[in-house]
Each structure stands twice: as structure tokens, then as C-alpha cells.
Length: 407
Length: 196
Image 1 (cartoon, rainbow over the protein chains, first blue to last red):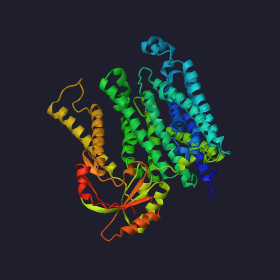
Image 2: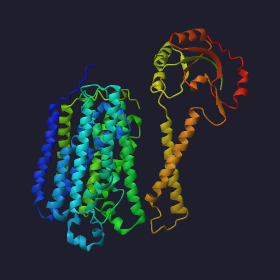
Image 3: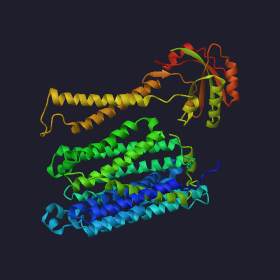
Image 4: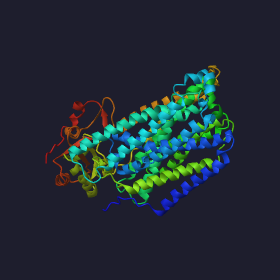
């Protein structure tokens, strides 16, 4: 059997990615003239959309690298057969990271306090709660931490990808293979530690939760992580199925896709667990400083989105993914992956917008256009990286384990 | 249950076992079961066993737990003995979710363990016939069920030809029974353990 090791980008693939990126660019221009240079309310709307989309898609593509590192640490071998696809998705981090960084910096230094209320020094001085958080919520810390966060994700991710590619031409001996696995483990654990310090704790607090500077939830970062990890697994599933349908990834079969489906299913439940824990504790304690967060979401303008979020991200996965056969079926996998990617996008939408616009939902084509732009960007960049390097990590010591994988 | 006649063949290699299973099935013999010291991936498929229904049973136990919890708490807190807890409504679903979750897990876990034991015919004080003691150690023991028309010598020869390192013919109880091995195996003394 001759293996198709090199991805040749089909012209339709290129057209779609270019088209989606064009839609994104067009939305950005139209949005800028509609909102971007309007009054403060309109500008807030413009930048909130950019913030929501860039942070969401950055965390989603970064979840691919998290998945690789976590399975490396767990000595997992099953994902090796489609590892290059995951790597290619994570190679979008530098690009989207740079975009997010620019947007966040504009919010901090250019936008003043239309999104982040805590930038207003007079307000902070008067407010005992905000002055108590001054050590954490200030432009300097925000900037330094954002640079460190995105920079180290890019650097450690690039390191992992390079290590995977460096054995492409020479098959390592058993001894070399052991050393290679150990080296991978070390770098993967460094990434995981940094990931825990950023996505799983501080970064969502800074980027998203500080939109409501008075309110706080220790569950928030985990909840954000759960959201983006499910969406990340959905994205990996979609790319793997696309490549399968194009005739690539000969060694990836329904067993691998079954496990990807299991990951989506399990982490959807995990997401719901955190979502519900955050909601129920606040509901039960009934302290007005805390319940204010759910006022616009639970019984305000965002009630529809609140319940839709729960239906797409919890009810649909638990009912559809529960059956073994639906995790082994391309059609249901694609349907659910797209639904979950959209559902968690909606989750991020209410995280950002329900705080900034509590009285109405300003969702329109602009939001979808920007999202389409980011999707196009991911498709374009992933395609380029997949076509540049071999699609099979065939010299990896665990490659055979992946071929004979059986659930 | 009934006592039946079996031909037992022992294999010491997985790579021999899998083709052997295939040949036995295509020769038309009925495999009673294969006893192995550890789980072997793909053996169930090779033997042509259908997928287990244990997960369906687990789902049913789970929703039974959910229903029990919701209807129980609902009855007590809204109809039987409504109490005001910190001004919350009597029908306060979010507060019930943790208990509902716990009961769902409890029902499905206990129910599935019991069902599993029943399906595998395992229970305290219950015995099952062992075809070969080394099935718990290092041998894969394939047991073929005989009918009145089966020529056992032919089956033994066939098993040897496909790689069995040890074969024997046994009359054994097919199901489980309550009691002890020594007493209950007495009637089967005439087991013709013919090391062919």
C-alpha cells in the first residue's frame, strides 16, 4: 500500500478558506464603519465582538496542543496516527495569538474603559472592591501576563511540533526512542504547567471575567477551559474526518474517531458540571453581589441564549453521544462537532456580551462575519501546515500502537 | 442446568488461538466459551459474540434513579411536608440536582454490578465448573460443546491439528450452582479425563 503522506490542498479547500477570510475582512471593515468609529456604546459593541471571537478561537486552537501534551504525559499512543492534524491546528496559535494580543492591547491602551471598567483610575480609587484588586487588575500586570501567556504557548507549542518532526527522516532505535519519549514528556509537562497557570487559572480571569470587575467566580477559568477543550476536540474531529474523506490518514479508523467522540462527550459533561456548580452555588447563596452576574443571563435579555447554551452543550451531547453507534458514525460526529463549536461560541458570546449589554442582545451578521473570518483563518493556516510536513508521524515509537488501536 | 459433554483444547499462544477460533467456527463446531487469564482484545469479535447490552441496562437503571430522586424529593418538598428554606421556592430544581445526580449514579452503578454478576454467573457461594485450572494462569482454554452426534475423537484430532497443546473430553455442568465443589462434583466422578 502506498501511503499518501503529503496533503495537496484541493482548490475548493483554498477557495473556502479564502472566501471565509474575505467575509471576515469585509465584516471587519463594515463593522468598523458601522460601530468602530461611532459613539462609546457602538465602539464597545465593535471591540466586544473582536474580543469574544479572538479569545474563543485562540483558546480553541490552543486546546489542540493541550490535548497533544496531555496524551504525551499519559503515555498515550492512540492519537499518533492523526497527530500531525492536531499539530497543524495548534500551529494556528501564533497567528491568532498575535491577533488577540493586538486586540487586547488596543482594549487596554487605546480603548480606555469602555470594556474593562477597572482601567478607570478615579473609579478604582473610590471603589473599595476594585482598589482591593488593584494588584491584579492593572494595565502593567495585564500586559506582562498576556505577553507571557501567548508567548510561552507559541514557544512551547513550536518546541513540541519541532520535536515531532525531527525524527521524520530517521527511525530511532529502541534506546533513542526511550530518550525521545522522555524528552517529549519533559517538554509536554512544561506546557501543561504553563497551561494550568494560564487557561486553567489566571488568563480567563484577566481577559474575560474582569469585564465584571466586582464579580468573581473561582470556577470561571475551569469552565472556560471546559468550553474550549470540547470545542477543540470538535475541531480536531472535523479535520480528521475531512482528511479521511479526502483519502488521507490511512491508519486512522473508526476506533480513533470513536475515542475523539468519547472525549467530546466526556468533556461536555465536565463543562456542564462546572457550569452548574457555578450557577447553583450562586443561586443557593443568593447574595446580591454574586447573583447580579446571572440577572441579565437567567431572567433578562439573554434568557434564550442561556437555555440554548444548555441545550446545545449539554442536552444534545448527552442524548446523541450516549450511544456507541453515534460516536462511530461520520454524520453524527460532524453534526455534533459543528453544533458544539457553535454552542461554545455562543457560551463565550454570553460571557462577554451579557455583561456589557445587559438590556439587549446586539447579535447580528457582524458577529457571524467575524467568526467566519477566524474559521477561514484556521482552515487556511491548518491546510498550509498539513501540506508542508508529512501527514504520518511514522517514526514515532508509539506509531504501531496507534495502528492497532482498539476501543 | 444440565450436564453436557465438552471437548477442551488448551492453547498457549494468542497468535495460534485467533486462527484456531476462526477454523473451529468455519468447521461448524459450537464454541461453548474460551477461558483466558487476561482480557484479549478482539476475541469477542473473532468468536462472533454480539455486543453486550450491559450499557442499555445501565441507562435504564440510571433513569430509574433520576425518576426516583426527582419524584421522591418532589413529593416530600412540595406536597407532603413543604418547608421554607431561606425563601427558596418549594419546587427548587437546582438544589435537587446534586441528589438526583447521586441517585442516578448509585442506581446505575449497583444495578450494573449486579447485572454483570448475573450475566457472568458470579455470586457469593455460587460455583461454576472449571475446565482447566491453568485458565487462570497461562493457558487459553477453548471449550467446544458436543451433541449426541458429535464424534469426540474427531474433535480432539481437529483441535490438535490447529495447535492445541493439550486436549481432553469432559462431562460438566453448564451453568452455576449453589453449593461446594467437592460434594457436588461427586456425581460426575465418571468424568472420562482422556488425555488424548
